[in-house]
Amino acid sequence: MSELLIRGRVLTFVNEPQGIDDTASYRYFEDGAVFVRGGKVVETGNYADVSKLAGAAVEVADHRPNLILPGLIDTHLHFPQTQAIASYGAQLLEWLNTYIFVEEQKFARPAHAAAVADRFMDELLSNGTTTAVAYCSVHPESVDAYFSAAEARGMRMIGGKVMMDRNAPDALRDTPQQGYDETKRLIEKWHGRGRAHYAISPRFAITSTPEQMEMSQALVAEHPECYVQTHLSENRDEIAFATSLYPDAKDYTDIYARYGLLNDRMLLGHCIYLSDREISVLAESGAVGVFCPTSNLFLGSGLFDRDRFDRLGARWSVATDVGGGTSFSMLETMDEAYKVLHLQGQRLTPFASFYRMTLGNARALGLHDHIGSLHAGADADIVVLDSGAKSAMEYRMRTATSLAEELFILQTMGDDRCVAEVYVAGKAMKARKAGAAEKRQ
Ligand code: GUN
Ligand code: ZN
Image (cartoon, rainbow, N blue to C red):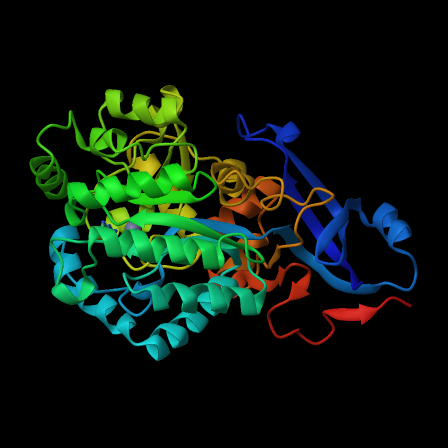
């Protein structure tokens, strides 16, 4: 079995930070190491201790003085929108109709889906993201392309065929039965194969008829092991349209609740304009509201109220929402998250940010035994961050005096240029820089 000792400054969380100086929430090893065997973490700790355990013959990847963290996790994005990022000038419904529903039609061609899936996975990895939850297009072939590209790289990925049977072009509509049958087949093919997890994916209430919602309900009941993902309360026009289509529902959240879709494996993108009642319903079910700051600003959607989620005991995660979101980088995403919260008088500490991109998002997915931290037994999905990768960062870093300050600089100024290396199940995925790996003398 292959073994590797990854050396550097190691940071991994054990709990959600309760304040700026909650040192009990993380483990930090200034001269640290992660010992990896067969794609799993054997031990994380001080280099002096861990290297003894690893033995003298082990290969060492020396990343000093860079930071070593668990791979970053993105809990909501759209793989068919990889080439539709930065589409100008529209809010949600117009943007979907003008750009997105045109772009997604290209995924009827398997060769196109395969090419974009490869590029999508590489883009995630170059940004240090090792696990993501994505929507594929309505075409089942797009799901095959997605999971094949993930499998080729050994990545733990979650995804599913979007189901949509109205308010979209003919070429993007399935039917309730077709959506059910295709989803069922894809679950059987992909869920639990290697590191793949399936997400049952009715796009949102606007593009699914009540009949399709019933089919989604059946799928969720028959496959409680699968995730469920949709969009909720992103934009005022969307809310008015969705609730007009389901006049018997109390509110937008109730549409999904009525069809039995809310559970602790459900991810609801955006959740901006929810009432206290709706957030409490999410809290009771364990469903997760997904905060997508770059998207919410880019599409002019609104501001996610994190404090109200916390106060009402509802779970939340963070995500890029590419291509409504404007970057694959979780660092850039947390930069915008900080600003969105700041605008509302809410605080996001640097430790809380890095917790959220790693263990926080892993917990939201119920995958914290496997990913999101570097505990013994975890998957060796790891990112190495260079806080001085850009000249302006390097210059700023000269005045930094604490880890918290360094993390905040990384989040505020950083992007894919700061990702020095990324490991998937212990395998280095970026071209190794000269001298990055060497046999210990
Ligand atoms: N709501 C329904 N579909 C989408 C989508 O593709 N992106 C965003 N941001 N919101 C949506
Ligand atoms: Zn989305």
